[in-house]
Length: 150
Image (cartoon, rainbow, N blue to C red; front, side, top):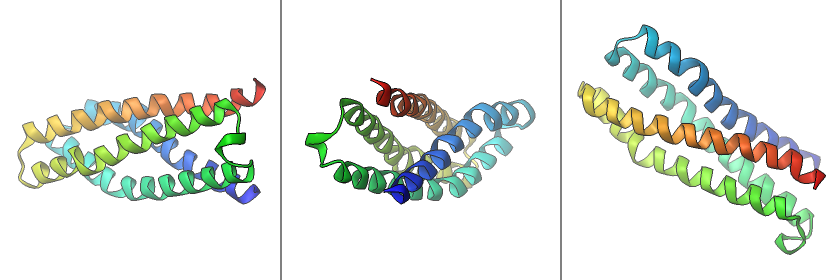
């Protein structure tokens, strides 16, 4: 039980913490000091390093969450806030899968080809989706903590 909670929290810290850092710290500084070609190279390289960790986090979060639900007697025995956490997590995972298989490959392809305008468009789509995922990820953390009090 404690191992499932630990793995769940580690996955959340890696994923949501990474999005927070990228969105709130790296993005504004990169936009301020780098020209578009360098900025796009930075983001393509950053995502290449970060996204494998997100896959690990997704697997940890999903697996450990399902283990915890099973330990509580299955979905029929859990509190409503667990359903909400699961639903938000599922949306976050779907958004990530979309990012990984749609705009991220476009970003990489356009950066390699030095086609900066379409690369910028792909990065803008990723930025919006990561902003959305970060927002609902923070909400999900609040649900996890506050849901127990209800």
